[in-house]
Image 1 (tube, one colour):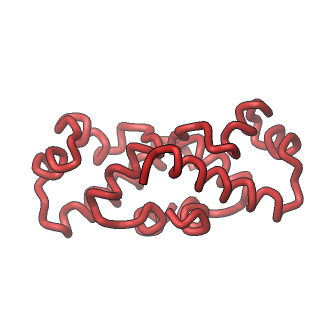
Image 2 (image 1 turned 45 degrees about the vertical axis):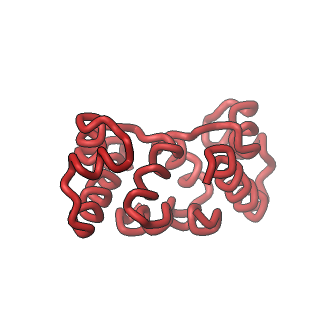
Length: 74
Length: 74
């Protein structure tokens, strides 16, 4: 799988989960203390996230990293 | 969970899986075209891996990222 596809699949999974929790993109970014524009670029699959950033997002989404990757089919 | 614990848990899961497959650390690093010293530092939990690097390791380990995170209990 190419890198762009990977990033997009993870971004979509994050966006889906965040929407399901009823958070707006901006309010969620504020909640996990991340720049709104940066967080938005994550959901668009533009970032090659590090483990620590993924963990910060997953923690905000109240789900395990394993669960997030499973929903992304990764 | 602090960042060091995260990295170590992932490193241990990678090491366990690689051992189960019967690869030495060096032969596995060669197989996924990664510097041996760098790969070794991943197993020791010294790297804040990016998504693309995780995917490269998981692919070599013939397992999904979700599976790897699940075995790391992350």
